[in-house]
Every structure is written in C-alpha cells, then in structure tokens.
Length: 150
Image (cartoon, rainbow, N blue to C red; front, top):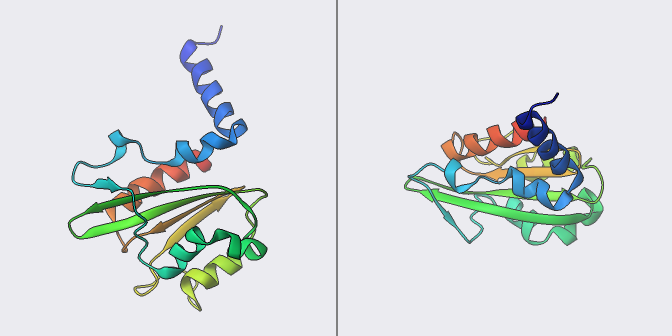
C-alpha cells in the first residue's frame, strides 16, 4: 500500500505539469524562501534594457521567441542587490536559444560583467534572472527552478 506522503507528492508533481497556470506559480519564491534581508517589490527592476524589453513588450518578439501565454515576475531588493526574475510560459516549446543568447549577451556566449542577465529554458518555460553577478537571491531562485524543471 502506498503511503499518503508518496501519493500527495505524486499528485503535486502531476498537477504541476498538467495545470499550466500553476507552473509559474510553483517556480516563484514563496515568502518563506526569501531571505529576511530582502524585500519583494511590485516594480520591474531588470539590470538590462533587453530583459526588460522582452518582458514588457513580449508581443514584439513573438516571431523570434514564440507566443507567450503567461508571464509573471518577482523583484527583490536589499542594500547592494536588486533585480528581477522574469517567468515566461510559451504556447509551444521554447526553441529560441540562439536569439536569446544574442539579445542578452551579444557576441559573448554567456553572461559578462556588462551583460549579467542569465536564463534557463525547459519545455515551454523560460526564466530570466536579471541581477548583478553572484546575487544570493538569484542563486536561491535558480536552485528552485532547476530542481522543479529538471
């Protein structure tokens, strides 16, 4: 006989992948996951204009990245660290890696001192972290996203 904990875990995992509206909600940091020295704010605070533009004007990029069916963001700040996590869900699987690499980093193939945004895409989900390099809150968010989307 299966334990209740196993069944609950199984239903949560199945629900996360079958209820699209909840996927992004599950990826976002909960209040208890946010370190005490950070506050969450209601405004976009991307460190680069490209990440901001992709979120704010996603319909302009539809031909290049695909149709966004849902998006959300979380902005965190503390003294010396501020930035935004951008969450996108696409109608189809995200296949615009080359476009996004070029948009965020130009000729570099990864984040640089000047272009510090970072991202992870899997299936229909894209998450962009727009923070200064080595931001602790980015690391916490990234760990959660990677765990849930692997």
